[in-house]
Image 1 (tube, rainbow, N blue to C red):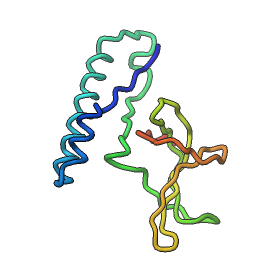
Image 2: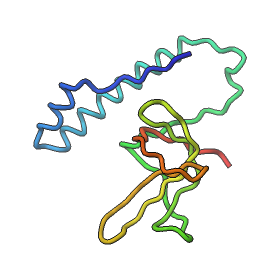
Image 3: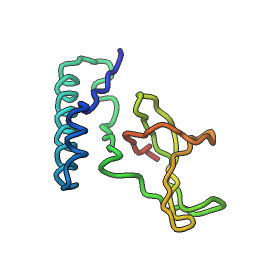
Image 4: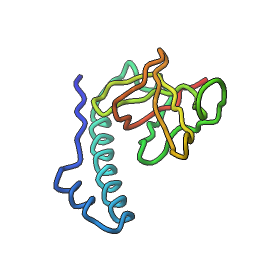
Length: 132
């Protein structure tokens, strides 16, 4: 099964970027995303997967525009890092990764590092907590 990720129409993006009121731009973008999620949910309800149905616990993806994993662990790296989570980039590729964030030389940084040690140079659009 191929998954398609609809993108925000360019005209709508330009309109949002032209708005001086950042809160209004954020509301419009979130409203569009909610519409996409509603469409996806209705399509999922029409899918029948009796063999899998009910066997997996329900998990919720978190959009990176709304929230990020908590970075709390310190160690021999810059800043703090999160627990390992499942992330998805803007092309639909998934990785097991940690988010590293902090402040260096007065500037905030946040980056995703895969569990095999590579920096993920793609835009991460959503993440899912991995159960313990």
